[in-house]
Length: 376
Image 1 (tube, one colour):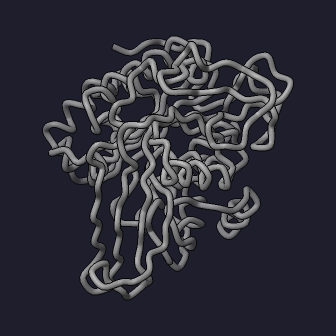
Image 2: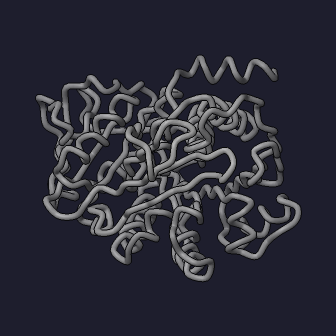
């Protein structure tokens, strides 16, 4: 059942975050170590640069974060355009994952964004952390000698379509238990974001996700969830079981039109679809994204319905575009944008991502404003 959070307004800043947070060059750290969780999330002075610490604002007795995301990141290897995985001699490496991509998008819009995860203590694990920090994302990682880094080989053929070879077997993230997560960081965040890919990964992560939503609700942290059915690796029936187990505890729910049809059996007009899902889980806010990138996204909040069409751009790489929308939308809500303004931020951030090679969006808040100005 839903845990009430009366002290907070969904997606909006509270008085706890009136002072702006310093960014990645802060010198105080929260150390998150293997087996850590609450007992090892301690504020200490002297910050590290080895990828093993979560940077926190200087001079603060309380760590306050705009957005905390919890999930796995994958190393994506892609051959040059027009070449095949089977024959390519070179591959470009990019870091991506629903939660890490959302954090990167939010950081692009100047939010203080944190990504929490579990990684093997290897060069590949450190590569992921290094890339995310370059995007402006603060990282809190449980390092382990067990498990692997998830990888994906992605080939984007114009004729045959995209081909993805995904390897998540024995991933370190799959063993993340509630005690591995620094729950104090979650409690002190304005918004927690998790996607369906995380609880679908293992029974342990399903339990951990349920605990995250419960802890966040008790603390008044806004809980945002994106179904991301295609990333779960589950059939529709099992995915529905996962969603039903968790989503009574979500405040903001993002669901793609294709997910609504495949998992919930809802097809046709997206407005009734949004209402049906909102009624099923008693969510305060529902956003329905569209399978066709040329169609408008729809947001439902209160008695109001909002539709925002996409911004037209030439797509260089569609990877991560949906996540960029989500990060931009959550950033807009945090900055006290109304629902339509937040949807516009999401659409503009998605448009920017489509022009960038890789999974994560990079740029600035001014870039987003420039894209929005084309319409306004």
